[in-house]
Length: 380
Image (cartoon, rainbow, N blue to C red; front, top):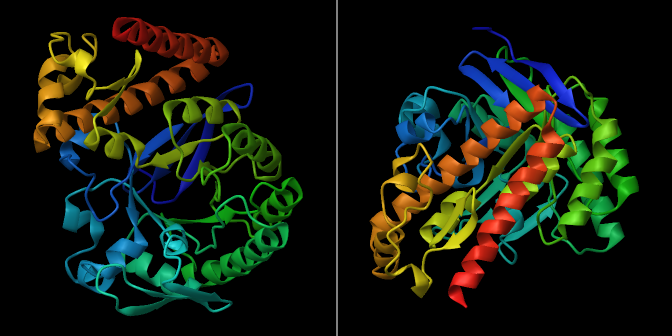
């Protein structure tokens, strides 16, 4: 295993890229989906299960972990990997997106963000340097710069202001991060839905020669077509030999299409959050297990899946658990959803290697559409 952070492109098919990130704690096969472990847990899952499903890396959240149990405490307990019993790579986001969501509880200026904790109302200040310091205390493998994420739609001047400040914060984060062999700091391209700003941001960040680059500020209310247009606008201005991470995305369809536009890494709470609310993702499309038509359906979610949650439990039983508000229902659906996401990523990687990604996309989308059409007919 390498002692350095390295990214290698293994195959391409159109804009779709198959690669590997290697670092001391493991190899990340890309395109990769990172399950979200916001506060040190992928909700409703044992981390051993998450690994068995095929996850090479998980995500932790700087904002939440700094509030509880506290970054200094995690450091005293051996770092986040030891604390949560996950010896593989961890990416921590900077906390910028969560702070953006604290409207009315935050004040932002050039020095950083001052905000009130949603937990107890205590006052905190996060500068770019403090964000990197916290991520260092957590001992994460990939650390994200602090940025300002603007919720769309927004005024062009506001988007430009946030983009320019995010770049200045990236410069400060790079200095604070320094040289950490085997680890990486990623910059975050901002610019909202304005192509010229995305290009400026990407070009400026590329000039910092960071180890990877994220595209932020998308999947925050804009249509999918706008998101894909911004990816197409941005990627040509990012180094080909470095990984590209689309933050907070998304649905299986978002992932499928974004890979076709050149993205290597993804994260999203959707599979876990949807599972807790009764929505299953499968190769047959989405299944709302709360619907009454599942009350006496003895079929599993997917009889061909390798995941026990997908294969061994009837839809009737899952329907009962969810309607009865039993925690096992959310656990099983989350397990199914994460299994499907990792199965999808494995299929994506294989298709790129085989030079048939366009066919794989079409076949996958057709199966979703066919399954959901059959479900509608059954409900009629």
